[in-house]
Image (tube, rainbow, N blue to C red):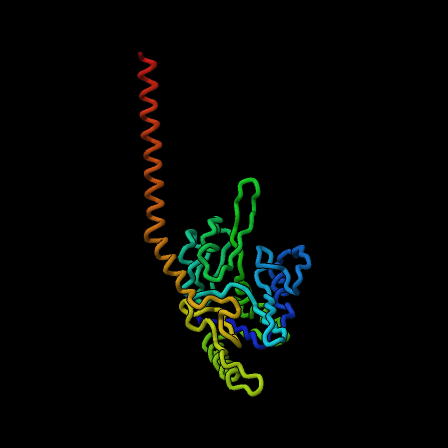
Length: 268
């Protein structure tokens, strides 16, 4: 099964948010009540009802206002920390190159949200009485992709800023675009780069960035999350289980001792 990938060319993105609307429509996600916060950006963050959004970054450089638009969503890592920590198998690395999600298997532990280096998953409360929750995130339109269709955001983008297809073809397209941006005439971007080709084993969603990753809020070393995951699984989690075991034994011993004392007092 061929691996697929998405390429988001931020040099072409015009902030129209058509992808945002299409994602909501296809995935039947509810609209959110928002308010004017002094920015064109809305909603203010990802949520259980917003799996992708266009982040508006407004800066003043050399006396001129500079806009940076950034499409925020799950990046579908090959070596995904969320998959590594998921205890129920709700999150998996699909053979086609994206992180699939089965909500019915999610136990609401929120490990994926805590360990994602990009801060993507959000928790949705499904039972306010018990506090039961489920993780939510972009699935790369797994229902469409596995049936031979492209993700709805790529299909909708009017600026052709989102490409989707065979991973090797997408990689070649991204590298060619970066070369063009670096060599451009009056609109030359010397710091243009392709983000995600080798990050965390290769991302299923990559970016053509006109500037350095930190300008867009992207971590320069997301692999550090895997170090934390490894430490958690090999050291912290076993210690937690040991502590739980000790606690259970202590409670049991305390019950036995108390019961014996009560019995002795009754006999006396």
